[in-house]
Image 1 (cartoon, rainbow, N blue to C red):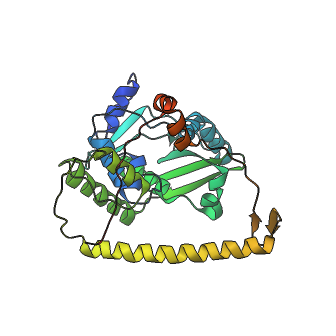
Image 2: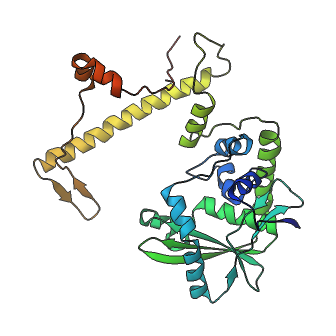
Image 3: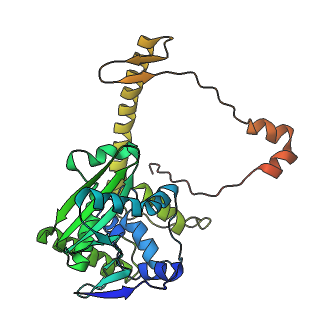
Length: 309
């Protein structure tokens, strides 16, 4: 069972506010740790902040603009009919779960998620595959709406159209609900930041939350000695691997000599001439200090360093 929230007449600001009131399908993969572009920490920031700002990028705009096209291609490929719902759905049993779906299938207990993908990501859709965070998005919609089937259709830009069919899975859906419930009740509601996962998204959130250090402030470092020793080991492994990488590259360069390209059945290697121009900021600062002052831009960040005691 679910509650239907009409989106008729709802402006963008109110829609963004509604999205903050629960976990949506696009949040599910991040909370489960399978979205390469987001993280549970980033979703937490979105749900707990006062900011009502929609994510915007060229990829997001293309996806939005081509949603109708993807739905049309799906109908042509399957013979099924789809419609917009004009509702947001909220689970009655788990009201922290909401769904703003792309399309519903007419005459079938099913929905449709429409995607666009770059040709560079075509391999992620090859051989019947679906990016994992999209799978979690579809199962989230099934969990909220109770629909037993969800289709996902994608246009690989400049390459092909493809679609998949996902069926209800009790074990997966129950586990998804458990993960989302834990996230909502133990992090969003009490305002407790979830643990980091090593992603770039977590770096961005931590920088936004704690972008300025209090001068000369210090705390005792408790419980991290073993983790920091492991960090030192990892840095050692990275240094060894980078040295091996550079040696391989140098061997190939020595083989190529003054040739620009080299190829085999498996690889294509280029070692091209590159011309670039860079401003000599040190010289400008010394010889034209007033010009440097006018055009210099101060950036603020925090540098993380670890040293042995």
